[in-house]
Length: 257
Length: 257
DNA sequence: GCGGCGGGTTGATCTGCATCAACGGAGGCG
DNA sequence: CGCCTCCGTTGATGCAGATCAACCCGCCGC
Image (tube, rainbow over all chains, first blue to last red; front, top):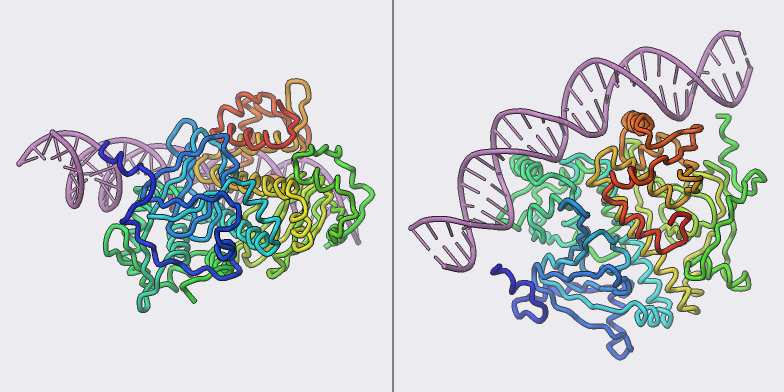
């Protein structure tokens, strides 16, 4: 395993600061970081390199992470097969270990370089009792993520393959896309296989769908992880959950109108 | 529409108290109700009759319900078709309106007679800042429900028809089942069509599956809404998410070992 | 150079579930 | 009683997507 070194933790000079997303005062992380580090929070700041793993012990449910930059995925593996579910977390998200269901195995995987804060639940809750606005922001953030989970469930439950791919592209565009002229560039944080898992599609099927989207002129692909949405309207129209995804984004800063 | 009267709100003498489930001190509702009503909570207690609807305005995201008895479902309808998702809430659950994604329409429907408390978010949060144990319980409850949503997504994403039905039966047994001898009796709060929606299956397919389960001796059906699990082990074994569902139940009182 | 490997693509085939249609039974109401 | 509607069942059919297989490509280490 020559990849072993990838698993090693801590400071990595190549981890670019990822455009230091501005947090508005209404957001949880924005309020939290303006408080300064004087609070007795016992928070540790971690810099994750791409594909770095954080194993989660079955009992350790009192850990909470807050994602500052980058994208992190939570993965749960079912007992027998490799089939599992992937949950994605984006900058500003709160990642409560107690909210990750306890299958045989669960772990966090940094999809990109990422900065996270790690808290113990107790001190964080104590801080929340001292600032009702912070608590309200925390609560709104949890609502948002629960709603996002519900939308994702809806995507998996009711949409067919092309619609799921469209939903994924829209979700990624809203979360980490950058407008370039009339198109939207996305730096995909996942491999094709992982996207397929996220969408509960077969990797082969997903490959066919992407080819079809490219043939139809909906997207172009510069390199393996760089796609551009050429026709936002067409992609948005083919996916019934677009309004819900956009509404979820309205609660946070978005690069798109 | 002679069913109109069903939609009317408020006190219904026929609403049987539904076995007044005991809440342990670790649970959110347990702690909350021991505080008495002296707190300035502005909570209103609602008694819902079966199939009673509570429409949710798109903007009204600062409402929080707590379910004391009964089963309530949240339903979101997509723009075009009737296809939507159903989320189920059981006694002890917290139902934050902000966590229900905003599709074209969303509403709560009481699946059975139900007692719920309705809060405005602000006073509830203020109360939470005054009692860190209550806040911790609230937080654990939200974690639990987020984890349950993740498990449900896993069920929809990775399991086939029979496995989904097994998962549904196990979930219902854990939440509202009562052991009767070596079997487990369940009073189904949903119609077949609703169960099919909840499992993202076709109603026809679900009907076939139930028939198969009955033919295989896994379940028996006394009346339309009363099923008994004859062979818990066999049903549990055919569904890969059983351990996760059971683990989720461990955080709350359960009628089953 | 070579071989191995993970990731991605493409074609051929299979299958589980949705779809459509017809029917039956239960309850409400005139 | 007859009519209607809602819920559930069953059969025949078609299709989307999973599965299996072969293959390509870039990368790494020897």
